View 1 (cartoon, rainbow, N blue to C red):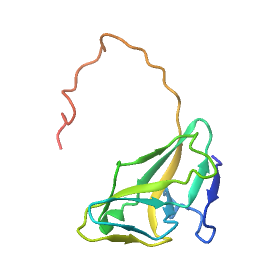
View 2: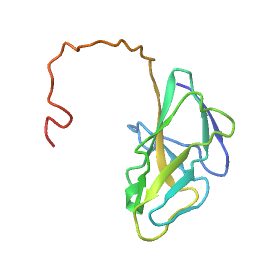
View 3: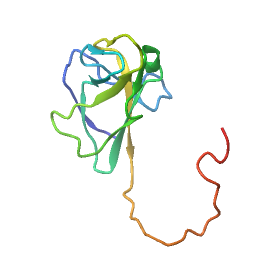
Length: 142
């Protein structure tokens, strides 16, 4: 799949796959951002994307981001195909769990993203599903 990408700061590298088997591309912070203790921060990722109508973007933190004391505020980010304007920069929303400010330096690889295809679904409401019940969420154990 070929997609269009706009960088807001061209001194920073294009996102890239870091290994042969990588599924996500790394994205870096466009500017140095300080997240105060127990507050949310918005880290601009220096990218706007134009993806096909049948695609979506999955934005997540890198697996090492927790070492900074930052956790994703909403788990993951979803980018719809119509979030594609010239100023629609992706941002990573994080929460600082530490008791001290956390600084994310400009150029830090802080997030990762992938683009996937989907098919729109059509809902059909029924009164009963003809399948065996599993027993609820978490029914298979930890």
